[in-house]
Length: 312
Image 1: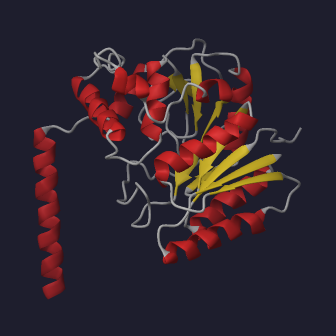
Image 2: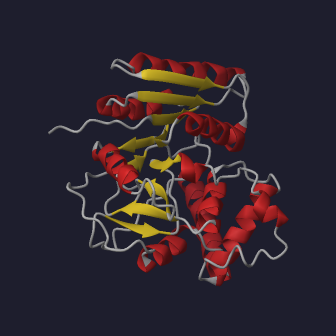
Image 3: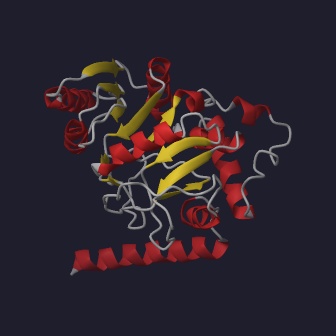
């Protein structure tokens, strides 16, 4: 029997029509019954043209029988307010949804993976997030997926019951008199320092983002994220016009691949220690002083090399 997607999809767009086109093509092939399009507004006249072109790409690509709900901001709200408010509206209408951004291209099997696990863990409060990313090929998983601490958001799905625990302003963090209690789930001191710095920066308005708050919601409520055994979503948005992925990082530029069905499910709902440790090392640790010095030297050597090449 052929797969039929029954779960709605939320698509977050901004000003990149070409990357958006590839994502929408993947969504169109899956033919979701409902599509929510969340768009931020422009900051400049040039961006107004780009935003309009990006919205047109989505509207022109909807050729299947689908209910479309557009949530277009007239002014620029920024990542923090635009994405969080858009998803608030989605989950006010839907019990569950798949979420994609305009630079995250999923393998076709991603949609079935999400749908099956949304159904399986619908009433399991310990599971808060179904992710499509796996950046750790060195960690071999015995099953089709594993549970971990970190919710990657380059293609993911969740339920209303989990999103209701999300607070974009992280009032529980700012109100905490002893933040070490909220950092207790992180096992390494540099990991704890990383999250204290990031969450402090988010609350102080120094970082305009929404996803660190989602990590806080999951961790502070003892929630687990699902990570697939293979990477199901590739990010094609690295570059100077990106909001965050400005610099190319080969560790994260992993091609999407299909996952096999039927899925092999873990026997227990428990965090996979290997995934947690390696993910923290890859993404979420304050760098050592030696690493900072090596990186500064490498960058300086790169500048010298480029200067010499320009003179040649």
